[in-house]
Image 1 (cartoon, protein in one colour):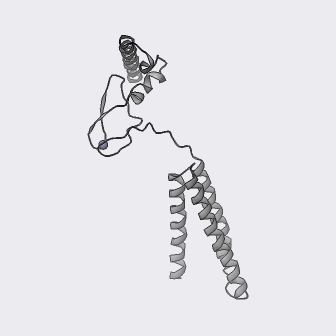
Image 2 (spheres, helix red, strand yellow):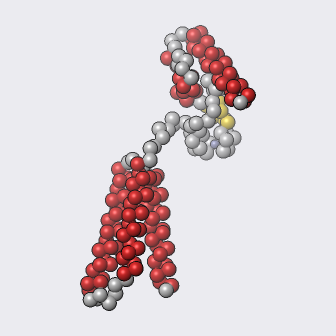
Length: 173
Ligand SMILES: [Zn+2]
């Protein structure tokens, strides 16, 4: 009884480790390799289990085990495939230089050249492509592509005003 309990925990650990690695390496060859290795391992267990039945002339035939094994394999591979296909968000490559926290997605005004890391409080310089990303989103000319400094400043000011308006509209709702 105790032995089969330990066996069950192994099955849970196997599934969790597989899912973790596949999710972490989703849409990369490493993730595909993890899925393949996981499938091979499960096929080997299923095969060995059937062989064990043959070798012992049916004296060790854990029927219950067999009926659980196939749905288990389907579950591990099904969830694994789902996780593997989840989209990877493109990272802007904007990380905190203090703690390597991913600063992508923070609310940044085009006027801010630095932003405080919400994790460790370090002031981090905002790369231009991140700084102007929101300007692009709200449909103004991207200041980074505007050649003259004066026009660039005007575009940034316009972007700031638009953002303040947006915020006020959000606040009044
Ligand atoms: Zn930090």
